[in-house]
Length: 318
Image 1 (spheres, one colour):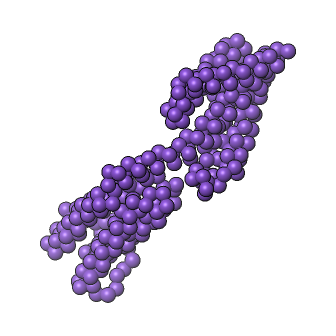
Image 2: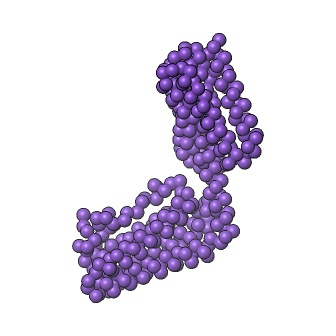
Image 3: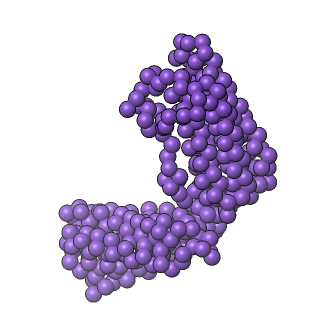
Protein backbone atom coordinates (compact mmCIF):
# COMPACT_ATOMS: atom_id res chain seq x y z
CA UNK A 1 0.00 0.00 0.00
CA UNK A 2 1.35 3.42 -0.99
CA UNK A 3 1.60 6.51 1.16
CA UNK A 4 0.21 9.75 -0.16
CA UNK A 5 3.62 11.40 0.25
CA UNK A 6 5.10 8.89 -2.22
CA UNK A 7 2.75 9.80 -5.07
CA UNK A 8 4.03 11.77 -7.99
CA UNK A 9 2.20 14.72 -9.53
CA UNK A 10 0.93 12.41 -12.28
CA UNK A 11 -0.36 9.85 -9.75
CA UNK A 12 -2.04 12.53 -7.62
CA UNK A 13 -3.95 13.78 -10.63
CA UNK A 14 -4.91 10.19 -11.57
CA UNK A 15 -6.14 9.65 -8.01
CA UNK A 16 -8.22 12.84 -8.22
CA UNK A 17 -9.84 11.61 -11.43
CA UNK A 18 -10.70 8.27 -9.82
CA UNK A 19 -12.11 10.05 -6.75
CA UNK A 20 -14.36 12.30 -8.81
CA UNK A 21 -15.71 9.34 -10.77
CA UNK A 22 -16.46 7.35 -7.58
CA UNK A 23 -18.13 10.30 -5.87
CA UNK A 24 -20.28 10.96 -8.92
CA UNK A 25 -21.52 7.38 -8.91
CA UNK A 26 -22.29 7.52 -5.19
CA UNK A 27 -24.34 10.70 -5.66
CA UNK A 28 -26.20 9.06 -8.55
CA UNK A 29 -26.92 6.02 -6.34
CA UNK A 30 -28.21 8.34 -3.61
CA UNK A 31 -30.50 10.03 -6.13
CA UNK A 32 -31.81 6.69 -7.38
CA UNK A 33 -32.55 5.50 -3.84
CA UNK A 34 -34.31 8.74 -2.87
CA UNK A 35 -36.30 9.31 -6.06
CA UNK A 36 -39.60 7.73 -4.98
CA UNK A 37 -39.76 9.04 -1.43
CA UNK A 38 -37.70 12.26 -1.46
CA UNK A 39 -37.83 13.55 -5.06
CA UNK A 40 -36.49 17.02 -4.27
CA UNK A 41 -33.43 15.67 -2.48
CA UNK A 42 -32.95 13.23 -5.36
CA UNK A 43 -32.67 16.22 -7.71
CA UNK A 44 -30.00 17.70 -5.44
CA UNK A 45 -27.85 14.57 -5.70
CA UNK A 46 -28.40 14.27 -9.45
CA UNK A 47 -27.08 17.81 -9.89
CA UNK A 48 -24.16 17.03 -7.60
CA UNK A 49 -23.37 13.93 -9.67
CA UNK A 50 -23.38 16.13 -12.79
CA UNK A 51 -20.99 18.55 -11.07
CA UNK A 52 -18.64 15.67 -10.28
CA UNK A 53 -18.75 14.65 -13.93
CA UNK A 54 -17.74 18.16 -14.98
CA UNK A 55 -14.84 18.17 -12.51
CA UNK A 56 -13.72 14.78 -13.75
CA UNK A 57 -13.70 16.00 -17.35
CA UNK A 58 -11.73 19.08 -16.31
CA UNK A 59 -9.18 16.91 -14.52
CA UNK A 60 -8.87 14.54 -17.49
CA UNK A 61 -8.26 17.44 -19.85
CA UNK A 62 -5.56 18.77 -17.53
CA UNK A 63 -3.99 15.32 -17.19
CA UNK A 64 -3.90 14.70 -20.96
CA UNK A 65 -2.36 18.12 -21.49
CA UNK A 66 0.43 17.39 -18.99
CA UNK A 67 1.04 13.64 -19.19
CA UNK A 68 -0.63 12.15 -22.27
CA UNK A 69 -3.49 9.76 -22.90
CA UNK A 70 -2.79 6.94 -20.44
CA UNK A 71 -4.20 7.45 -16.96
CA UNK A 72 -2.95 4.92 -14.37
CA UNK A 73 -5.53 3.32 -12.09
CA UNK A 74 -5.08 4.67 -8.55
CA UNK A 75 -7.90 4.43 -6.04
CA UNK A 76 -8.51 5.52 -2.47
CA UNK A 77 -7.96 2.06 -1.05
CA UNK A 78 -4.49 1.96 -2.57
CA UNK A 79 -3.35 4.83 -0.33
CA UNK A 80 -2.60 4.29 3.37
CA UNK A 81 -4.74 6.45 5.64
CA UNK A 82 -6.83 7.89 2.82
CA UNK A 83 -10.53 8.45 3.78
CA UNK A 84 -12.64 5.65 2.30
CA UNK A 85 -16.17 5.93 0.91
CA UNK A 86 -18.79 3.65 2.41
CA UNK A 87 -20.69 1.61 -0.21
CA UNK A 88 -24.24 2.81 -0.70
CA UNK A 89 -25.74 -0.46 0.56
CA UNK A 90 -24.37 0.35 4.02
CA UNK A 91 -26.65 3.41 4.13
CA UNK A 92 -29.79 1.43 3.32
CA UNK A 93 -32.55 1.99 4.05
CA UNK A 94 -31.64 5.48 2.86
CA UNK A 95 -32.56 7.84 5.69
CA UNK A 96 -32.80 11.35 4.29
CA UNK A 97 -30.72 13.06 6.98
CA UNK A 98 -28.10 10.31 6.89
CA UNK A 99 -27.68 10.74 3.15
CA UNK A 100 -27.49 14.54 3.38
CA UNK A 101 -24.82 14.30 6.04
CA UNK A 102 -22.91 11.75 3.98
CA UNK A 103 -22.94 14.11 0.98
CA UNK A 104 -21.63 17.01 3.07
CA UNK A 105 -18.91 14.83 4.59
CA UNK A 106 -17.78 13.67 1.13
CA UNK A 107 -17.34 17.23 -0.08
CA UNK A 108 -15.45 18.27 3.06
CA UNK A 109 -13.12 15.26 2.84
CA UNK A 110 -12.35 15.96 -0.82
CA UNK A 111 -11.55 19.61 -0.14
CA UNK A 112 -9.35 18.69 2.83
CA UNK A 113 -7.48 16.13 0.74
CA UNK A 114 -6.46 18.71 -1.84
CA UNK A 115 -5.57 21.35 0.76
CA UNK A 116 -3.35 18.97 2.72
CA UNK A 117 -1.69 17.74 -0.47
CA UNK A 118 -0.98 21.32 -1.58
CA UNK A 119 0.45 22.14 1.84
CA UNK A 120 2.94 19.27 1.65
CA UNK A 121 4.09 19.99 -1.89
CA UNK A 122 7.45 21.71 -2.34
CA UNK A 123 7.57 21.96 -6.13
CA UNK A 124 5.92 25.15 -7.36
CA UNK A 125 4.14 23.45 -10.27
CA UNK A 126 2.77 20.69 -8.04
CA UNK A 127 1.64 23.22 -5.44
CA UNK A 128 -0.19 25.22 -8.10
CA UNK A 129 -1.89 22.11 -9.46
CA UNK A 130 -3.04 20.94 -6.05
CA UNK A 131 -4.09 24.44 -5.08
CA UNK A 132 -6.28 24.65 -8.19
CA UNK A 133 -7.89 21.31 -7.27
CA UNK A 134 -8.53 22.51 -3.71
CA UNK A 135 -10.21 25.63 -5.08
CA UNK A 136 -12.30 23.48 -7.42
CA UNK A 137 -13.52 21.32 -4.53
CA UNK A 138 -14.26 24.38 -2.40
CA UNK A 139 -16.24 25.83 -5.29
CA UNK A 140 -18.02 22.48 -5.56
CA UNK A 141 -19.02 22.73 -1.89
CA UNK A 142 -20.55 26.15 -2.52
CA UNK A 143 -22.17 24.89 -5.72
CA UNK A 144 -23.71 21.97 -3.81
CA UNK A 145 -25.12 24.41 -1.27
CA UNK A 146 -26.61 26.48 -4.09
CA UNK A 147 -28.08 23.37 -5.69
CA UNK A 148 -29.63 22.35 -2.37
CA UNK A 149 -31.12 25.81 -1.86
CA UNK A 150 -32.54 25.74 -5.39
CA UNK A 151 -34.32 22.41 -5.03
CA UNK A 152 -34.97 22.24 -1.29
CA UNK A 153 -37.18 25.22 -0.60
CA UNK A 154 -38.39 25.55 3.01
CA UNK A 155 -41.71 24.01 1.98
CA UNK A 156 -40.07 21.07 0.21
CA UNK A 157 -37.65 20.52 3.09
CA UNK A 158 -40.49 20.55 5.63
CA UNK A 159 -42.47 18.08 3.52
CA UNK A 160 -39.49 15.73 3.23
CA UNK A 161 -38.80 15.97 6.95
CA UNK A 162 -42.43 15.08 7.64
CA UNK A 163 -42.12 12.11 5.30
CA UNK A 164 -38.94 11.01 7.06
CA UNK A 165 -40.69 11.23 10.43
CA UNK A 166 -43.63 9.16 9.17
CA UNK A 167 -41.30 6.54 7.70
CA UNK A 168 -39.39 6.36 10.98
CA UNK A 169 -42.63 5.78 12.89
CA UNK A 170 -43.92 3.19 10.41
CA UNK A 171 -40.65 1.29 10.02
CA UNK A 172 -39.11 1.53 13.50
CA UNK A 173 -41.42 2.91 16.19
CA UNK A 174 -44.58 1.03 15.29
CA UNK A 175 -43.09 -2.50 14.96
CA UNK A 176 -40.85 -1.82 17.95
CA UNK A 177 -43.82 -0.73 20.05
CA UNK A 178 -45.87 -3.75 19.01
CA UNK A 179 -42.98 -6.02 19.96
CA UNK A 180 -42.31 -4.27 23.26
CA UNK A 181 -45.98 -4.45 24.24
CA UNK A 182 -46.24 -8.10 23.30
CA UNK A 183 -43.01 -9.05 25.05
CA UNK A 184 -43.73 -7.03 28.18
CA UNK A 185 -47.38 -8.07 28.58
CA UNK A 186 -47.79 -11.53 27.07
CA UNK A 187 -44.89 -13.07 29.01
CA UNK A 188 -46.16 -11.80 32.36
CA UNK A 189 -48.61 -14.68 32.78
CA UNK A 190 -46.20 -17.60 32.22
CA UNK A 191 -43.37 -15.99 34.21
CA UNK A 192 -45.42 -15.16 37.31
CA UNK A 193 -47.54 -18.31 37.09
CA UNK A 194 -44.35 -20.36 37.15
CA UNK A 195 -42.94 -18.26 39.98
CA UNK A 196 -45.96 -18.71 42.24
CA UNK A 197 -46.48 -22.35 41.27
CA UNK A 198 -42.94 -23.40 42.20
CA UNK A 199 -41.65 -20.57 44.43
CA UNK A 200 -38.37 -21.29 42.66
CA UNK A 201 -36.89 -18.17 40.99
CA UNK A 202 -34.67 -20.25 38.70
CA UNK A 203 -37.65 -22.12 37.26
CA UNK A 204 -39.41 -18.80 36.67
CA UNK A 205 -36.30 -17.46 34.95
CA UNK A 206 -36.11 -20.42 32.57
CA UNK A 207 -39.81 -20.12 31.72
CA UNK A 208 -39.48 -16.38 31.14
CA UNK A 209 -36.36 -16.78 29.01
CA UNK A 210 -37.99 -19.43 26.83
CA UNK A 211 -41.20 -17.40 26.51
CA UNK A 212 -39.30 -14.23 25.61
CA UNK A 213 -37.11 -15.81 22.95
CA UNK A 214 -40.00 -17.80 21.50
CA UNK A 215 -42.24 -14.75 21.39
CA UNK A 216 -39.46 -12.71 19.78
CA UNK A 217 -38.99 -15.25 16.99
CA UNK A 218 -42.73 -15.60 16.47
CA UNK A 219 -43.41 -11.85 16.40
CA UNK A 220 -40.44 -11.18 14.14
CA UNK A 221 -41.67 -13.61 11.51
CA UNK A 222 -45.27 -12.44 11.89
CA UNK A 223 -44.30 -8.79 11.31
CA UNK A 224 -42.00 -9.57 8.38
CA UNK A 225 -44.52 -11.83 6.61
CA UNK A 226 -47.61 -9.71 7.27
CA UNK A 227 -46.72 -6.84 4.92
CA UNK A 228 -44.06 -6.47 2.22
CA UNK A 229 -44.23 -2.68 2.63
CA UNK A 230 -44.78 -1.90 -1.07
CA UNK A 231 -48.38 -0.73 -0.78
CA UNK A 232 -48.39 0.43 2.82
CA UNK A 233 -45.12 2.34 2.61
CA UNK A 234 -43.90 0.64 5.79
CA UNK A 235 -40.52 -0.19 4.28
CA UNK A 236 -38.37 -3.29 4.43
CA UNK A 237 -40.16 -6.28 5.99
CA UNK A 238 -36.79 -7.64 7.11
CA UNK A 239 -36.03 -4.47 9.08
CA UNK A 240 -39.50 -4.34 10.63
CA UNK A 241 -39.38 -8.01 11.54
CA UNK A 242 -35.96 -7.62 13.12
CA UNK A 243 -37.05 -4.60 15.16
CA UNK A 244 -40.29 -6.22 16.26
CA UNK A 245 -38.70 -9.54 17.18
CA UNK A 246 -35.84 -7.91 19.06
CA UNK A 247 -38.11 -5.61 21.08
CA UNK A 248 -40.45 -8.51 21.87
CA UNK A 249 -37.57 -10.51 23.32
CA UNK A 250 -36.25 -7.48 25.21
CA UNK A 251 -39.67 -6.73 26.68
CA UNK A 252 -39.94 -10.23 28.10
CA UNK A 253 -36.36 -10.67 29.26
CA UNK A 254 -36.25 -7.46 31.29
CA UNK A 255 -38.78 -8.64 33.88
CA UNK A 256 -37.36 -12.17 33.70
CA UNK A 257 -33.84 -11.20 34.76
CA UNK A 258 -34.81 -10.38 38.39
CA UNK A 259 -35.61 -14.07 38.91
CA UNK A 260 -31.88 -14.74 38.86
CA UNK A 261 -32.05 -13.48 42.46
CA UNK A 262 -32.21 -16.57 44.73
CA UNK A 263 -34.70 -15.07 47.20
CA UNK A 264 -38.22 -15.52 45.85
CA UNK A 265 -39.86 -12.45 47.38
CA UNK A 266 -36.89 -10.22 46.54
CA UNK A 267 -36.98 -11.47 42.97
CA UNK A 268 -40.74 -11.00 42.80
CA UNK A 269 -40.53 -7.43 44.10
CA UNK A 270 -37.74 -6.55 41.66
CA UNK A 271 -39.64 -8.12 38.75
CA UNK A 272 -42.78 -6.20 39.66
CA UNK A 273 -40.79 -2.95 39.71
CA UNK A 274 -39.34 -3.74 36.28
CA UNK A 275 -42.84 -4.43 34.94
CA UNK A 276 -44.00 -1.02 36.18
CA UNK A 277 -41.06 0.65 34.42
CA UNK A 278 -41.78 -1.27 31.21
CA UNK A 279 -45.42 -0.22 31.20
CA UNK A 280 -44.41 3.39 31.87
CA UNK A 281 -42.00 3.31 28.91
CA UNK A 282 -44.70 1.86 26.64
CA UNK A 283 -47.11 4.57 27.77
CA UNK A 284 -44.53 7.28 27.02
CA UNK A 285 -43.82 5.89 23.54
CA UNK A 286 -47.52 5.75 22.71
CA UNK A 287 -47.95 9.36 23.88
CA UNK A 288 -44.78 10.64 22.18
CA UNK A 289 -45.02 8.97 18.79
CA UNK A 290 -48.54 7.58 18.35
CA UNK A 291 -50.45 10.73 19.38
CA UNK A 292 -52.29 8.97 22.20
CA UNK A 293 -53.35 11.07 25.17
CA UNK A 294 -51.26 10.30 28.30
CA UNK A 295 -54.30 9.28 30.34
CA UNK A 296 -55.73 7.03 27.62
CA UNK A 297 -52.36 5.45 26.87
CA UNK A 298 -51.65 4.83 30.56
CA UNK A 299 -55.06 3.33 31.17
CA UNK A 300 -54.90 0.97 28.20
CA UNK A 301 -51.38 -0.25 28.89
CA UNK A 302 -51.63 -0.53 32.67
CA UNK A 303 -55.09 -2.11 32.58
CA UNK A 304 -54.00 -4.73 30.06
CA UNK A 305 -50.78 -5.44 31.93
CA UNK A 306 -52.63 -5.75 35.25
CA UNK A 307 -55.08 -8.26 33.76
CA UNK A 308 -52.31 -10.47 32.39
CA UNK A 309 -50.32 -10.18 35.63
CA UNK A 310 -53.40 -11.16 37.66
CA UNK A 311 -54.01 -14.15 35.40
CA UNK A 312 -50.47 -15.35 35.95
CA UNK A 313 -50.69 -15.00 39.74
CA UNK A 314 -54.12 -16.71 39.92
CA UNK A 315 -53.01 -19.62 37.74
CA UNK A 316 -49.78 -20.02 39.67
CA UNK A 317 -51.49 -20.07 43.07
CA UNK A 318 -54.42 -22.29 42.11
